[in-house]
Image 1: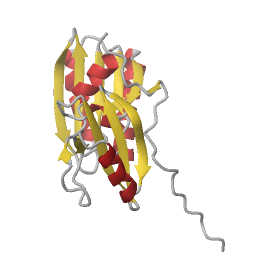
Image 2 (image 1 turned 90 degrees about the horizontal axis):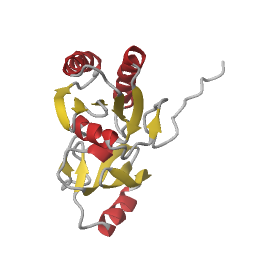
Image 3 (image 1 turned 135 degrees about the horizontal axis):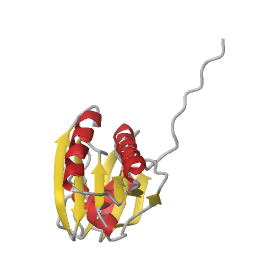
Image 4 (image 1 turned 90 degrees about the vertical axis):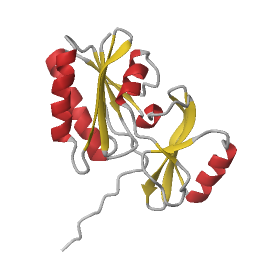
Length: 201
């Protein structure tokens, strides 16, 4: 099975193709505001390296809602054009690290943080929202594990920086590990959307 993986949940995007038990294509790119142009250029390069694509794996976050939606849109195009199966895996399950078990954390704004315990590419706990106090308790409970984040967190200055890796996503999907959604994909939501009601005149 040939698997193409996409992650655009952070400002560092990546695309990879896993085929014949190896990564045959991998490229990263940076886009602070929109991944769309860089992503589709990279997808064209990836398609040239694979005669067919059986499966497309998307990193669902947590992270940039717009970024994940762009990845899903690209995957839908591949599904329509090539008949590929779509699967979703939390991006935090595929951070670029040699550690097999780690804690993934991030700033979720509004004085909250997300927390995930990842073991062998599977989210054993989370992603879940915590207060700073709750997160510190979790980190103490798992003090032997490395703590990773895709960006720096002022309240937790010792976290190690590691971006999601499309190559790791592709390997996980090819092995059927860590998949949390198939077909109809949506970004991971950590809280209910904040909706402002219009004021009555």
